[in-house]
Picture 1 (cartoon, rainbow, N blue to C red):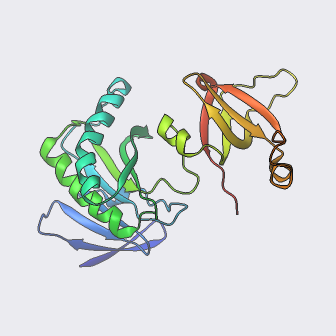
Picture 2: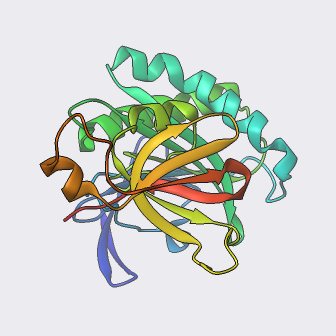
Amino acid sequence: MAEAWHEGRWIVLEKTLDFSRVRAYTNLRLIEFTRLRVARATLNCLLAGNLVIDRVNATGSQGGSMSKRETYEAKAEELLAPIVEKLGIEIYDVEYVKEGSDYYLRAYIDKPEGVNINDCEAVSRAFSDALDEADPIPDAYILEVSSPGLGRTLKKDRHLEKSIGLEVEVKLFKAVDAKDKRKEFAGILEAFDADTITIREGGEEEESEGNADEAPAGTLLTFERSNVALIRLALDF
């Protein structure tokens, strides 16, 4: 066993039976790497404080094409589905993205009471083995398994459906009003369809204190989904 100083943290390296892998332990995280790429590890701390497990698939090239993204995500989610089902966990999202020179396959998992370190580790190990066996992504990538966090992004209809009535933050690609040039909004998610998202901006306090038969206070704002760069749950501390 050896120790290494990396980005202001002590990391303990422990060889496993598979000598192509090491485990890097920090105070709150376990990150599993292939081919000893510790120096290039991303040691981010999630807002929710949950574990992230990273793995590098070093069997492919660094090249990639964004046109392959949805295919890779679909294949990865298909492999992940039976794993989380056995563990009583659900898939929140799977994404394949490029950041800098590295590609990341990220699996976000969730359950009603929230996922913990043990959940992430169990899913990561089983998911890593399934990816090794099926090898659906020929490119080199880093695998991350984590919770979606408190300010989770609402990318799919099922995410929006579960968030009706909750406060969200919306960021637009471009302003929609010549006078009001804002591109960031916050409000209660009221509705959505295939083309639009509607929030109620302001009036939360008046709504809670007013008559139940009265129309909710605030201003309804409807955005074209094609102009929405990001929508996520608002953080309320």
